[in-house]
Length: 220
View 1 (spheres, rainbow, N blue to C red):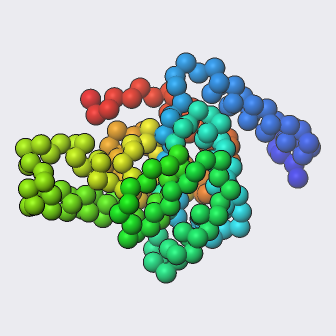
View 2 (cartoon, one colour):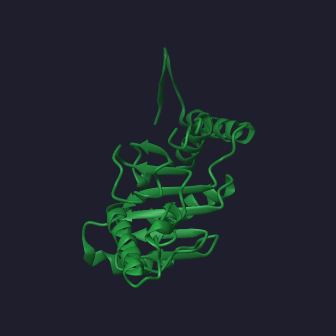
View 3 (spheres, rainbow, N blue to C red):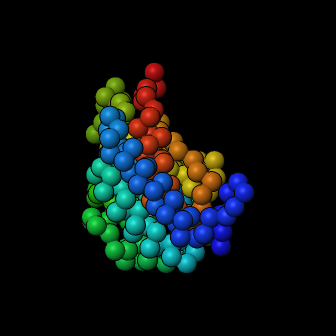
């Protein structure tokens, strides 16, 4: 295998050496950057991504990259087309060798996720938001909640995944799935055409550096 170069070819060992230098370059840029890295990183993948060979190994490495680069919370959002696979995904994702405690929630779960690593399997943002509104309506109807007291916090505290990601990464396409509709309003969105099976640390560092180079406006 050779890489083209004007007038000649580079042998594979030189190519690999260059790749290693680029990874080091990205790591140094991140380390010396004046801006803080994202404290909460979310990534959107699909059920098909998790069917690829080595997908869970990539996920385990992703946790290491995120926590090793300054994150204190990671959320994994898995879009699901076939409801029949949810149970299998829940079982497999609970078995992942993770560096921090993991909370896994599926489409029918309403219990709040409170762990450094949170995994949503097919729990769409619209459904999650609708359930929160339904709970608020029930509390108002029973007199447990004053309508005039309802604010943003009232909704957030009733969501299964209440935390707002600083950086949300979508792999494989420039399209945001039905996830974290409320929580990602002020998140920095990063789209990459790199599929999950090919996602590497350099791709994560690119996303983080892009985040660090932005000036967050929080809706202003």
